[in-house]
Length: 355
Image 1 (cartoon, helix red, strand yellow):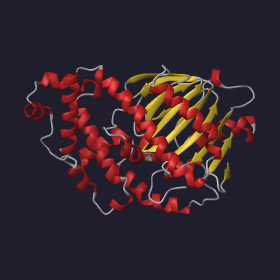
Image 2: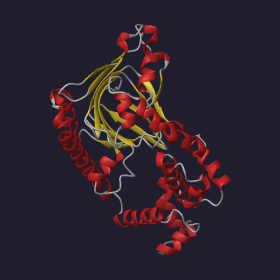
Image 3: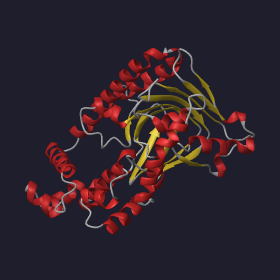
């Protein structure tokens, strides 16, 4: 890993070319493991090794990278999500190549020239061929500061290369990757802010077009229901019957509204678990007992909470708590001299992080 820093933005370079052909994929696996678990199929393996490279730049609230790689499988399952705790969005342009796969229960296809939005707190499993990408990783907090609507539905959004905002964003990402190496360190925050604002504007335009394609009344009711659920996660009376009565809608209509989200009960439990996970993962909250957090978010017993938590994330609540306590120590041990894009991703959006 080569890291450069003078008056320019901090940048890093990773390449498998430095390793022996037989070791190249393992070198890549270890490097990209900060984001994804990866595997290769026999048909993807080249006789002369595995070719991959990352050039990354750190702009404070976001990272920009240009990545090239041979064909492989990428995955983030619930266990990986819980282990790394990354709370970011990945905005990714495939300049060459493309991918197919699933995001949770949904099929997903991305072609060259298109931009995808991945929520790194949500599962994905995709297969990509030989590809070249430009990526922007932005912290959730930074995105939410400029996105005027709930961003819960961004995972898997594709901005098409159709001459509209998708093409605008793709052109900007290409230009940014081509010119970022010449940006002064002092200008990094300004460029980062402008980039996040443009990404948010393009996302907003695409999301509004999607909403217009749905029956407006149904979309409005679902939005109200989701907001109500968010405010009442701690209530033991938060269930389908209560929602049906509160909003004066039939149970069958309620079930239809939540069917794309996995059902009413599943949606409520998923939101409770993610909120509890967030509390357990806070380094400053380790004094709180696990059962207190479970009850705060509507679970009737610590045993029920622990079973549901392990089923969702593949880890126990105490595992997440222990990682949260250890995280500040690990972060303090990192030094600027050894940091590369992997370290920047782990610390993105944390207090005091910047260029």
